[in-house]
Amino acid sequence: MPATTETSARVQSSNPRFLWNEIVRWTFELCILRKEGREGKVAVILEERLPALIRAWSSRSGLPAAKCQERLCSLFGRVQESVEVGFMQQRMIVGEICARFAQLPSAPGLPAGSGAFGLRREIPIDDVSAMLDALGEAEFETMGEAILPVRRATMLPRELFAEEPAALSA
Amino acid sequence: MKTALNKSANKTAFANGDGRTAETGTMYVGLDWGTNTSCLMAAPQGSAETSVALKQQIPTVVGYAADNMLERVLPGDAKVLFGQEALAHKLYLTIVRPLSGGVIRDLAGARLFAQHLRDQLKAGDREVRAVIGMPASSDLAARENARKAVQGVFDKVIFVPEPFLAALGYRDEARLNDGKYQDPVANSLYIDIGAGSTDVCLVQGHYPTVDDQLSEPFAGDAIDQIILDGVLAAYPDCGLTASRVRDIKEQHSFVLAKDGATPAIATVMIGGKQRKLDVTDQVGAGCEALLQKVFELTRDLIARADADSASELLQNIIVTGGGSLIKGFGVALQAKLLEEGFENPRVRVLGENYKDYVARGALKAARQAKDRHWQNLIG
Image (cartoon, rainbow over all chains, first blue to last red; front, side, top):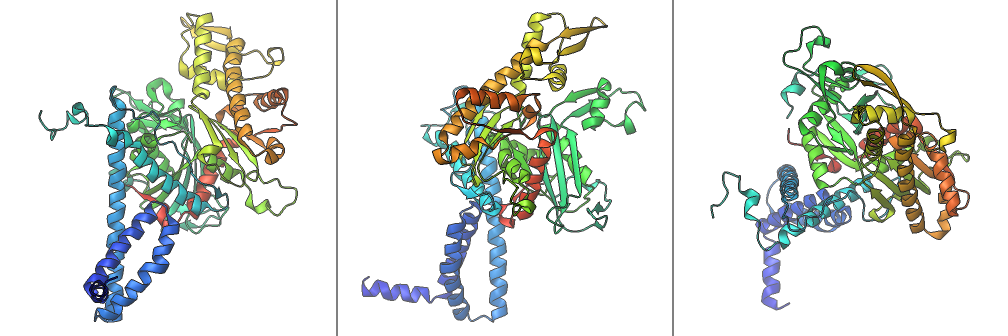
């Protein structure tokens, strides 16, 4: 790394605002991964990323410990809620797209019964929690696969949203 | 957010298994939402692992009363009745089965039925979290539909494939140290014959992956259709309906050799007169078709199993679901496997209590689920 870049990175990493933004970013990442059931990656962030960032920010923010804790708790709550809402919206949007495509006789290859329910890796019977994580992960991947034909289509059929009030006129 | 229906729900305290009551805290629900019958189990958070505070089997039926219904004919002059009560008053109701093939077809009916299930809990404003079994072959749209049906009814849900829950529910953890107890999830093949699909899966110490299961959209509803077509071909004027065929099947289904079977005699009304029809051949044909399909799936899945595990696997073939109630099914499947050259197969049929296993497994899963697993629903 060139000396100027190294210095700039060091200055940046001691800036409380930069550290806070990093905490926000990794907290989002953590909550999203958790909703996707990717607990392995969650553990890495929890063990390797966030603790160091939180320690650095707490010591440089100039705030009393209780205030730091309060801000962090508030951040975690807001991010969790935001990710939860995002996932609900995602499910509803994917469901709506799948339903609409299923109704179209000329739908570009959305396979019937897309998104069958199952695990993609072996989970011991005793580990119910890991089974539920893996189902969440599979559901997330399935959602992506289910709308692939939509992404692949060169353009959305115009009639798909024709009855919507906000449909674009030709 | 709770619906208006929820807010008006009975606020009676929920009884614990030991007779105590608890008015606060979360309630866990395990639900096998079946096409014909649903099984509901519930327990308050923190209750003993094996305790079940409520267990009910309810026919998955919604009955709507006509607007001009006379007073005092229906209990409480209800506009909608559910389950057994709806069936008992079916003469005066339009009967709807909100599920078909294991998935929701009538969202409005399914929502009302789900609310009826919640009312059985007498949970008032307590948070209710439900683990709901879904057919392994259900797709994303089916799961989204189920979510819509329980929005505002349950606060949080998790959907789990039914074969997982059946395996979990069938396992008796308390007996794992008993040398005589054969752990049903160590090396088994589960056959779940539902209404819409037959799912066959390998359970070898781990939950089946997509490679460990086979599914065919051929099950109870397909048998009904074969029987109906056959009976109508033989007795064109009999006016048999799909729901009557289901009753006949449930009473008379069999897969033993015809000469060993009790004749299936169905009583139908033709022109106001009672007539007895011999439907043995038609019922037999439907059940035989299912047996053949299950046999093919089983054979194909055994072929996928590791060669070293096959002999033990053949000793643990477990049939569950409504199709398992067909008389002689286990014996006939065992005979077919033997005929095919499989060594010493042993087929066990879970029988009448099969619904309990899925619901019990769902309740076990609910107790062990962490906060991150629960899906929030918009109320």
